[in-house]
View 1 (cartoon, helix red, strand yellow):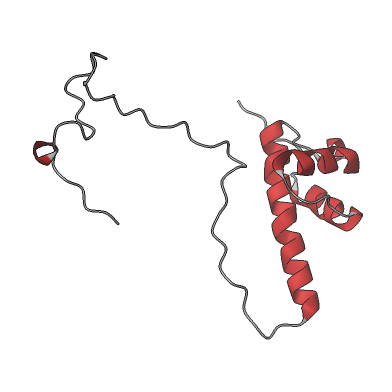
View 2 (cartoon, rainbow, N blue to C red; view 1 turned 90 degrees about the horizontal axis):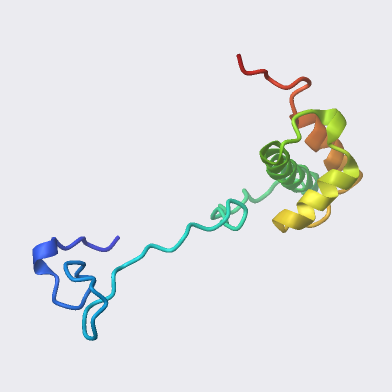
Length: 121
């Protein structure tokens, strides 16, 4: 991690925000960029443990994909398994950049959704 320098040690013209008049030669104000959309961020993946049967890796990756899709469904307003059709799940997968899910994965996504939505009081 880079060390943070106190403001007093900044040299003129290097993110010095004291003069943001826009005059020629004046430093530009530093504007933070907008954060990426929630599904554009990629979580760093840890390597999977070696030595397991191939079926374990298939099931594990299916569960991870189903969890991603279930979270995206909840974020999009689908809160019950009855409204989470294969077509809706497939369209959502395309929108968030995930390969189209199989029927088995769609069933797993529906099993992760609550049976009835929680009501706010």
